Length: 529
Image 1: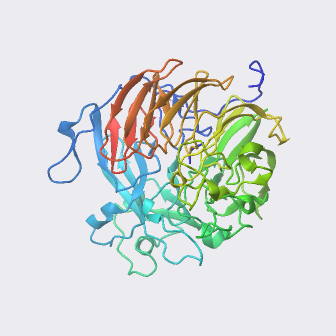
Image 2: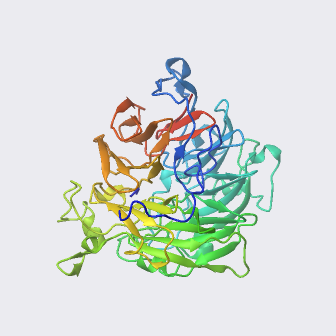
Image 3: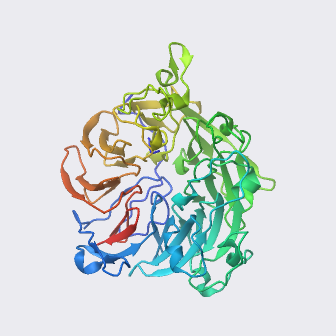
């Protein structure tokens, strides 16, 4: 869940590895390594008309749209965000459209789609069937959410965490240029181990290699796997989605790693954390890693399922045997008043409004521990991250942190620049632009906060549940909620520009690439010019 001063003149070492280039691709979650969704692209519209469904049910009738280049039918669920690179758009969804291909039965798994950037035409897709053979005790029944990972693209390769708890390396051209190895069993993979293999077509995805998180690492995912990969040097960094058991009583694999790095060329395990993070997690490890340079050293920032934010030395090359990830600092994002009441530890699931006799009234006032589901964002020597819980747990008190990334050790006190407690729990990632921080909480409120002081400038209330993160570009803030897509003027004065009804909830985050704004509801993707 998206989570979410001391001295304003503090000089922080380090620089942001940020994505702010005009008219550029958006090849990974957050646009760049820092995961800061701020772009310098201009000429973006204040709104668009999403149009009506075509009479034949094939999609949106473009004649009924305005400011739309093209639309693409997704499935019935889309939680990850599209990425754009090399003239192609990559997006994950569920398997609703599998029924259109006579080779497949409805599998309730996921699909990675590759579309032509100019037209939205489907170039290829990889079907990921539901994983039916799972270790006992797992609550892994949310694979129907589809691919929640935003594909990371580098050169001719695409890296995705699938709905079946795997990491796959894909050829950007799919099967159109032949079946690249060493993995050559796509026909069996796409139907699952208990079905008869199908023939592979040019419009199918091409798996180069596959790494099974359950079989290789012993992780036990909870609900769904959700992480977007960070590419650095020869390595891929990712969280493992390790979690608790079905009754929500214990961590099934407390010794399994929470964050690892794989060799991007082979999929071989290259580095692993040995901080025993899984033994302390509350629910599941869902946050995605980010990268920043501090004092001329690259660091990987990681939001823990235990509510702590971590920084590790960023390795760029593989090691045999796998090397340990070296921790540089840790920061507990749950202050004492969120952890203890009357001198006793507050149970994490006491804050789940669905529990019998829960003190959480779902009004945003409940105070208790949370984890980090949002991605830590790096900007000019600082890390911005907020805490939250699974939105199904209801509303509760959140907290946004601004952390001095130049410190070392346990920096819970020494690294705190400011905190902002005016928001609910969030699974949304913050965006930093021109001295302001924007973050959306689960209750659907967009908060604008001074990046130096942590003081709020304004709060915009949508009265609609929100899971995604804000995009800032061209003097505007773009974000989606369960009931609509919003455009608000960026800056210290609140001014709403537009609200657009998409016809189904928007749980993902908008992106911009090469002058085009991409907006994905649960069912459709719009390329807005």
